[in-house]
Length: 367
Image (cartoon, rainbow, N blue to C red):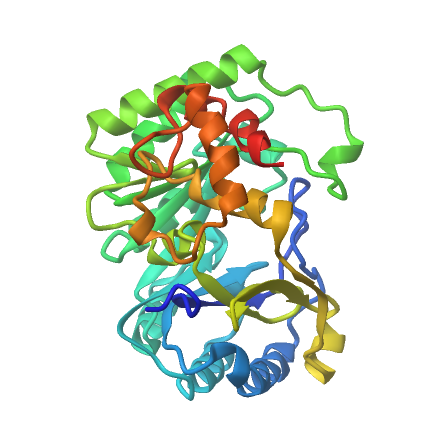
């Protein structure tokens, strides 16, 4: 694969949610689906047809259905979307991931999605403690979460957990990790709660765990997960060997991705020019016309920062021949400063232990 024609992933955004989580700043709607998923399926198929020049003859290397809550989408609409995607080339052994909310997991839905070709599920569990789930504004409880995990135990499933939540303690966090281990899942996405602008939490005064407690939680996570055979391969990602997310790895290696659906973001390389853009957010507007907006060419200092924010997330670094783009001279000059300060590795692209521990500060070298 040419560095000027990097691997291409597909992201499909399905925007429906039953409730707006107070920490979420994604493009979602809490309006009922009401068969609009069928209309959206047709719009996504049209969007893919119109994206031929962006796909540029490449095969999709992975597909990811995110949201929103994709599991609110009907099987009929999913079948139509996948039929549209099949008109594009894709890898024979492609990874197709589908996000699910615990409340939506049923044996029948898993079977139907598997028949359609879904081969990886992502379960938004977040915590095994009701008090913490209430604090997060989740619409499921511990019991429904455990039921969902049990129904998915024979699939390739990744579980999402969060830390730094109101009412969470080091002991309750460790218990959630231990229950995750007991689930026999092979992948964990572990996120610290962050308060973003334009979220409900941003307007509230929250009593979150202290920085010291959060650091202790991170230490507990490393201890518990490593003891049980999980390897951290990215800031928020832990996996047993062979179960890493191909889709997310393509992001961090600076591969391309095409986003379809309302508000979906894309990063595309054409004729040695890297651009980022998104589709319009309003669902009805997208269904009528799949308009591209906010397109920017990524170059100069912005490109250096973009590279650093992705490549440096990879734990233990990456060799230059594994990176899906050419690194500009300006990036290397900034990188050498990080090496001299003991924050970046000499023999490959990546952060030292100290640089990784303070990754946000390390990335600022590239601003």
